[in-house]
Amino acid sequence: MSNPNITPMASWVPVAKDSDFTIYNLPFGVFQNKRLSPRLGMAIGDKIVDLSVLHEEGFFSELSQLPHDIFLRDALNDFIGLGKPVTRKVREIVQDLLKEENEQLREHTCRGKAMVNRNEAQMMLPVKVGDYTDFYSSMEHATNVGTMFRDPNNALLPNWKHLPVGYHGRASSIIPSGVPIYRPKGQFKDPNKEQPEFGPSRRLDFELEMAFITGGPTKMGDSISTEDAEDYIFGMVLFNDWSARDIQAWEYVPLGPFLGKNFASSISPWVVTLEALEPFRQAGPKQDSEVLPYLQCKKDHAFDIQLEVYIQPDGMKASKVCTSNFKYMYWNIAQQLAHHTVNGCNINVGDMMASGTISGPTEDSYGSMLELAWKGTKPVKLEEGGERKFIEDGDTVIMKGYAEKEGIRVGFGEVASKVLPAK
Ligand code: MN
Image 1 (cartoon, rainbow, N blue to C red):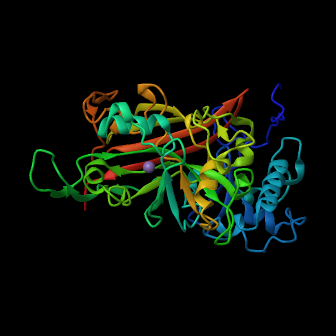
Image 2 (cartoon, protein in one colour):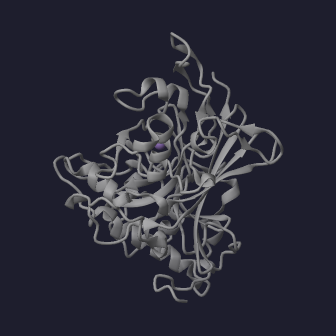
Image 3 (cartoon, helix red, strand yellow):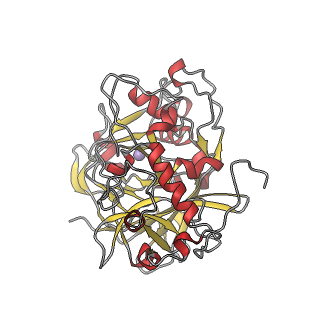
């Protein structure tokens, strides 16, 4: 194999060829089922490795600092808080145990107890999110939005190429895949009317994003350099930053997004580690305006992750409406974290930092309905008939993401959420 980052591996656990959860991936999540209380697991194929069982059986005995109940929690925070050397080692031990040639777990009496069926498990929010930040780091997205709402000739504002623009979002309404959302209500103003109106949003949209989850914590006053940034990033998830465009357009001046954004954000439940994404690291887009030294990077921090968005109306087939890629991001995760902390802002374990809508260069790669249907002027056709300008009640929005190279696949699964009528 030509890629030095990839050592060929096979597992004794059956893994379908198109499975996101290969032995190269082994993402972390929190699950429960009818029998088991919430606990930490790792996905492989159609199974979940119950880490608490492996710990009980002594498979992690070389890690003396692991508390006995560390995997019997309802969030990954305490585990992530043990630091990368520990979390990385746990992943390596499990990866080794799952290898085809390794008999230790395969032939162990605890095997049945340790391997839980994924289709019987309910996935929970993987972390308790203390703080959520949303960036605006796709140049294509920022250009499209600037073109639609301001001026095509000056679509990017003067600061955009000098710093990763972002805002502080709301953590309380971050929910895992599968939990439906209610159409938000709020104020919006028709440009042809004198007064604003109140009611259910008429322009409900998704935003295709990815988010990283931080380790830490850091102290107030301290900053994280681009060079050290990845030491503070545990892993990534898919992120649907639900947006009500009509509420957003009326409220956002001068302080930015508020009720148009904070009613819900949906995430995929499996956290894919940076270690698993390593083979897919590559250079990001060339930054054509030289950035200040604290934003300069010594290595590549972009990742080649293919992204898809589907809309599935109630009782109908899902239609793919967008194909994008995380590699298009102008600002990378190291620059985002360095910028976020350069003023001395502290971070905590389990903070979530989303990329901003990930739009690519072509019209079918735009990461929101706002752009795909260009402000409602070019409705998107659905496979079984009908079209969409925005998201309607009963629609399920599904986002998928995976990296694939030389027959090796590391995927995120999906984040799927249905829109219910306003309460
Ligand atoms: Mn967003």
